[in-house]
Length: 445
Image (cartoon, rainbow, N blue to C red; front, side, top):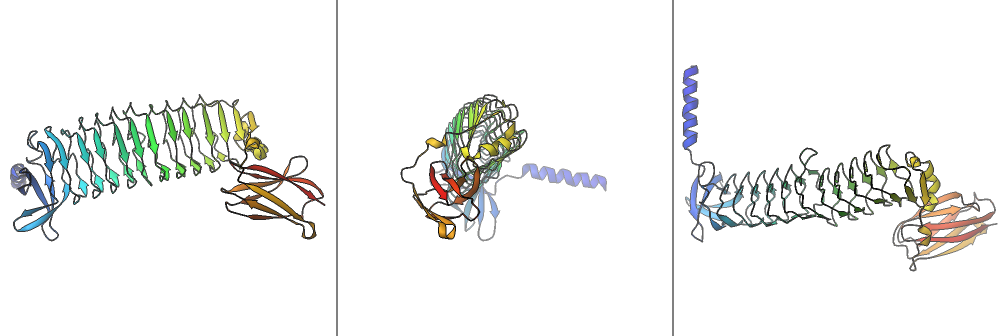
């Protein structure tokens, strides 16, 4: 029985070795023969482009320019070409360009691995690019990724040493390990993925080995910078994080040692663990008003930082080691009304030089306020004109203590302040945000 089983396995193996990788071949309009494998033999009929040989095409088989049709006639039926199959053009060094039709939705494993392509346009119909799809295409200098691609597989464009720039479209939600690793000529990345939730790992960064990468442009619709997105991009010198971004995730810019300037957008609420860890070139950092939480090691070993500015009225929650390795004797500039809050806030209070920021110099000529006291009902009416962003209202007593705070939203035209709990005296009402700092005197009789 055992011997019979071994013989059957051997027969099946021998049959498999002699089985062709394609189901049929057809000639396109240019006279080129293209091989196909049937992926659906019932309506709707579908095929994938496949290799000419059993496991790959001869290196000189597909040469020059190849135009893949969107459908092909076989055995009386029209088959829709929906994918570029595994290894279809693998090692076709003579191949210089391919036209992919809008019927194709996926590009398979090593579909164009180690081939001679110089440029590729991936149409908007494609939703996935598999692992190693364009690996080792060293002559590839231009790649346009269609606006429907949601996933880019592991090492998909690894070792494409001629590639100088890449645009990640809005549709992408995941980029796997080493996707663009060792693209040694890559100098610019346009990152437009609106909601990319996965982008490499700590052990397998997407752009590892891209030593020439110096420019990262974050699109104005991106909502978060994924974990380890630009980990170890040591050549990048400046980053502007757009106002649409709400979170900078774990290790997003970790070990970007050449980074000297970061502008964090006004919608970021979270700066996660190790987000800027080991960015030793940073000399200053400004925390916008929107930030509520700064996690451990966010700015670990950013030893070049000589000042911190926080624009947040309420001190963001700061974990113990958020600024580990940063001197506690550098100036920390905070909003004047919040000086005492920062001086007593957990972990912020470890800094020795917390100072009032120069917001007093900020003016906005389009913004106007009027104060109308009404002592008969213990109320005062604040009339506001030209408020374009949310603001805080602080009421100070004669010795500068904050006795009451209010919040007003952009577009608000009136704020009623209850004076029933106030003792007689002179008070100041201050309206404050990033572009406004105005004060009115209030007398309670």
